[in-house]
Image (cartoon, rainbow, N blue to C red; front, side, top):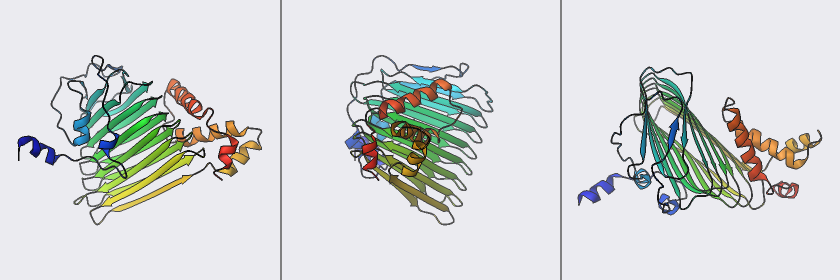
Length: 351
């Protein structure tokens, strides 16, 4: 076996129910210069490049030459101001963030993009040190784009990650949010809100793998599908052998608003250990007609009532202290996607 064949045999594609990453992966447009990443609160903690090991075939496929951007939060860091990373939309980017032991930090990552030429490839790698407490907010707001974004976090012992992700727009492509609980006592809580509109074909996967003992992983996903969009929402909770005393829980809820919308909610539990707890819930349904009726009796039109319910369903699992400009932009994105695609006739057909 050649060296190249040996390397290929050690890498696998991440699990994606009912789909293939090779099927989703498309050629990318040539990057225009280096990706621009701005931070307003890193206090000069941008560090020199270090080799980052390839972990799987998706990681290998998304690598964009020397386009890695590196940031480091030092050990025992206590910062009141959040670390804001804004990714430019003209280039394919790879970002590595290292959080030192016992640090406490809030990281907010934003991507706002219009239509792109070719598929947009972005990858983010988080290394979270022992005892660190991280709040990670990611906002992806796309219009007419073809994207593939892979975010992966690895937690050491007793580290905690609270991840809030918003994915909005008429977009085609795939998102993989993956958490590896490596150290004993580490915890991750992944909350994802997805709005799929237009004629987009979107695959969203949240996966938490319990590898250390007494680890806890929770996944909560809310999705809304309108127009003729197709959403596949995967939740994967995995407890590997040796992760005794661990817990994996997940909830996946999807609302379909129009007759041509399609959606799948796929909850998976992969358990290879005894002495653990695990559970899941999933539903795909139309908007609650009783809620619509209640709002209509208060003089609110059905179109406005639907918008209010969708806002509450999606934004309700995102943090309430998002900057006002971000909240307004997300609300405007919801209204834009829903504009012209929701009608009281369409809602009635789903009763």
